[in-house]
Structure formats: structure tokens, C-alpha cells
Image (cartoon, rainbow, N blue to C red; front, side):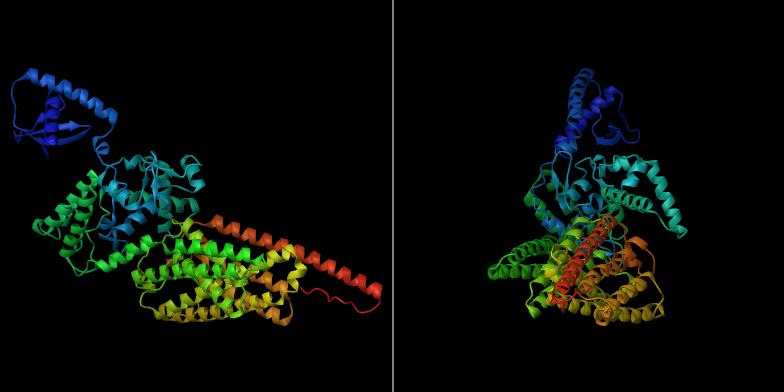
Amino acid sequence: MNRHTRAAGVLLLFYSVVAGQGKVLPAEREFAVISIRGKRTPVRLPIMKGCRVILAFVSSVVCALTALAQDAGPPNMQSVADTGGLDTKQFGLLAIQDNGRRKPIDTFAKETLTQITGRSSYTDKVGKKWMPNDFLLSVLLGTRDWKNEPMVLVSFGKLKEQLGLEKTQRHFSFAQLREFAELRRIVNEAHALKRAEKPLDRAQQEALRISDRLAFFGRVMDGSALLIVPAPGNKTDTWLAPDMTTVATYYNEMQFQAAQTRLQALANAYDQGDAFNFSLAAHQARSDLRALNPSIYPTESQLELEYFYNHFEGFYRAAWCYGIALLLLAIASQRRKTRLLNRIGLIVAIGGLLFHATGIVLRCLIGGRPPVTNMYESIIWVSFAVSFFGMIFFLRYRAPIYLLAALPVTLIALLLVHQMPIAMPSSIDPLVPVLRDNFWLTVHVLTITLSYAAFALAMGLGHVLLFAYARDPRSVRDDAPMHFWLYRVLQLGVLLLAAGTILGGVWANYSWGRFWGWDPKETWALIALLCYITTLHGRLAGWWRQFGLVVASVVCFLTVLMAWYGVNFVLGKGLHSYGFGIGGETYVASFVIADLSLVAIASWRYMASKRELEAEVRSEVSHSGGEPSVAPAET
């Protein structure tokens, strides 16, 4: 306690005694208890007697100061310096145990802010932009009234209607949501249904997520989620929050004193906005915490690697490159002298692939596994494979149409995961037990997702051709190479999906003791495979020709979408529960409706063109009396 704090304590004690709000403890005559806004605080002070006049004067001064303080707000929220400009890297490199993994606090802070608000940064009511590390420190140290800050995401409209919340508002305060008895009732009902193994509706699922969000936010605010003190035993032992009462179960006061001193210095430097001492204290605290158990504390290289990945934003950079390359190639496709634009577009697209690949490699190095854990990783991997396949086919056939088909698919996929951080979190979680140490499963998942990439590329080509059919069916009908390229991509996809399905059966027999069990994931993978085999067979058998192949490449992808997204996010049943989630139905439904609408428009234009062509043929035959010079249209 410094001299300013001690003087304030003296004044407040005098005021509380005169006003009848304080009392002297009977057990210890050198201490007094004062009540400030309902909080009882012991103050060390020699007992003073007499001098009622002085006490009355002091009490009047303190009353005036207290009134001013109440107008200004809580003292601890007014005295904190501006921390937005602090370099939080050293603090972000502190290790923390969270969700079964040891990672930098930088990652934990980003995931915390994203889980609570739905975004990786937050702008408060007064317009200040909070970055993850700054936000986490402010919450832990209580420099702001975060309980009453409207920042907790509630996005589902039906649930907001049930709770009586404003439908147009998406964020509400922690204190406001905790007071809703209706929310607690819905959560209790959802827990009861889960125990009975009964399905939940969307409102109940969202209520559970909000309840989890509030509980997690509460643990962050009280500091119990900050597990930065390593356990003295194995890697799997639970780490501790830096509270001496808790830490005493593992370490004595002398062992933890150095780390505790550094952490207190870090907090003080943050309060004062002291950038140098803040970074110094964070670096020293990391060294002291590692010294408690060096064998399980992450190395500097591991922490630096993940910190670099967090701030490198490879997928975001890749999205920009893909968008610019797509724009350049699209402009080049509409002009005659296009060599320069094509080359620049190709170079930028390759740059996007490099950024994309770097992000995937970094995730693999950090997680120590292939990208097979969740929907976020599968979309990142599949979108990369789409552009990679497009680049390979472009180099093989020298056809820019492959890149024009691949780049929009990849770009939309990256933008989708960027816009849906709650439904598809980017956290690098440990593998669930069924996925660990299983070679066959890893090969199976990678092969299946590569087939999704091939079919997504075919779907992109199909959309390019459908747009062309909707604009000028006759010119597209004569473009045989484009339909041949589409056929080749479909062949690749069928080969990969068939191999992946067989490998999945091998893994199922290895893990579950049966080759096939009609699990929803297995069933829809088989349906997708049969649809695409039927497409290729129908083309060979003459059931349909060019336009039929184009329509099938688009419509059949809806079965892939069901096997990939629908089973996990809509059905939510089966043995593949490690990929389940909720959210995104609006985006997917909009895509399906737009897809089918495009197919209907292109089909209408194609059939109209076909009837016109047949009418021209009949007219020519009737006038010439011989064989027509124009062949009838193919389906």
C-alpha cells in the first residue's frame, strides 16, 4: 500500500466513523473496517482519540470528494492509462492450458474474444477498439465494467423472441442475460433432453451455447480460466490459475514467489500504460513460470510459431490474392490481347496458393497432425485443393477456364469461414480418441476431402458453363473442349471418392469392428458416389450429352454438400459426432436455392434454343427438300 492509498484510507476511516458507517474491530485495536460501496475493507491505522473538530472538518471534505468520485465513476476505471498502444507480444507468449492443449495466451485471448462476441476484435460503447490481449488483461484486472458491456453474441432470432430481446440487436450484456429466468428454463429443458438422448430444436441448441458462453465469460472474469501455472507432474495434469491459495496445492510460497512478483509487476505496468516494464515483466514472468516445470512448459520456438501463425493471417492474405487474380483473369477473358493480364493473374494466384499452403503447414506443425479435426479445417483444406487442382489442370491443358472456375469456389469458401467464426471455430483442438494414432482414418479423411475438392472444381466449371448456356446456348454447345475438361475433373472426383469410401470401410472395421453400418455419413457418401457414377455412365451410354453433364455436375454436388455439411450440421447423428456443429443454414439454403434457380434458367434457355434450332432445321428441309445442313441439337 503506497502513501497515497494509506492517506485515502485514513480519510475514509475518519469519515466512516463520524458518519456511523465504520467500526473498530474488537479483536485487533490497530485495524478498522470501512465500508465503501458495500465492500468491507480492513485498514491498518493507529487509534486516534479526541479532536472531534478535526474529525468533523475531515468528514465534510471527504463527503465532497466522495460525491465528486461518484459523479466521475469508479476510481479504478478512471485511473487506468490508455493501453491500446501497448505491445502485448511478450504477454501473448505466456503459455496457458486450455481445452486440453498448451498454447500461447495470444491464442487463448483471440479465441475468448471470438467466442464471446463472434469477432476477433471488439469496439465498445465509447468507440474504443479492443484487441484480444488488451481485452483479456482488462477483464482479468477489472479495469472496465465488462459485465454491463453489451458484447455477448445472441444471433438466433427465434430465441431472442422467446427471451423478449430486441430482434435487430445482436449483442447483449453479461448481467442482462444472466437475469433471464426464461433462458435458464430453456437451458434446463435442453439438458434434460440431452440426458434422455432426445433431439434438441435450434432454439435449445442456441440457448446451450449462450449458457456456455456466459459460464466461460464468468470464469475469465474471476480468473479461474487463466491456467498459466504449470503442474509439477505430467503434461496431462491440470494447470492452475495464479492464485496463491490454489497454487499452494502444488508449490510452496518460496517456489512461486518469483513468478507472483513478476505477474504483479505486469499488472501494475499495464495499469500505468508502462510499455517497457510491461514487456519486461511479461518476459520475466514467462521465464519464472517455465522454471517451475521446464519439462512440460512449451518451448520458446513452439510459442513463437503459434504466435506467428496467429498474426500471419495466411488464409486472409490468400483470399485477397485469389480475389485479385480472379478479377485479372476475368478481365483478360473478355479481351483479345490478354497475355500480360493472364501472366499477372497467374502469378497472383500462385501467391495465393503459397499463402494458403503456408497457413495449412503452420497448423499441421502446431497441432502435430493433418487438418482433419473439424469443419473449419476441412473447408480450408478442400478450398486449397480446389485451387491446386485448378492450377494443375490449367498447366496440363493451358485452359484459363480451370482457374476461372476454381478461384471463385476457393474465395467463397475462405470468406465463409471468416464470416462464421462461431459455427466454424478456427481453434486447433486435440484429436478426439477415435482419430488418434490411426493411419487409415487419416488417409481416409484426406482422400474423401480431396474428392470433395475435385467435385467442387467440377461444380465451378458447371456454373461457368451454365452462365454461358443462359446467355448464348448455341455458342456453348459447339465448345467441345470445355465439356471434355469438365468430364476429366468428374472422373478424378469419382476415383478419389470411391477410394476414400473403401478406406473408410477399412478404418470402420479397424475401429468399430464392422466394414459398413449405414451410418448417416457412410450412407450419404455412398449416395454421392452413386450419383456421380450415374453421371459418368449416363454420358457414356448416351442418356445425356453435353448440357446434361453440365447440369449433373452442379446438381450432384448437392449430395456432396449433404454428406459434408448436412450430416454434421443438420442431422447431427451418427458415429461421426466429432464433426458436429450448428449454424450456417441460411448460407447453405441460399446457395441451394440460387443453384437450382440457375439450373432452371439455363435449362429454359437451352430448351428454347433447341426448339429454335429444330424449327430452323425443319424450315431448311422444307425449302430445300433434302438433308439438313445443320445437325439437330443434343441434350
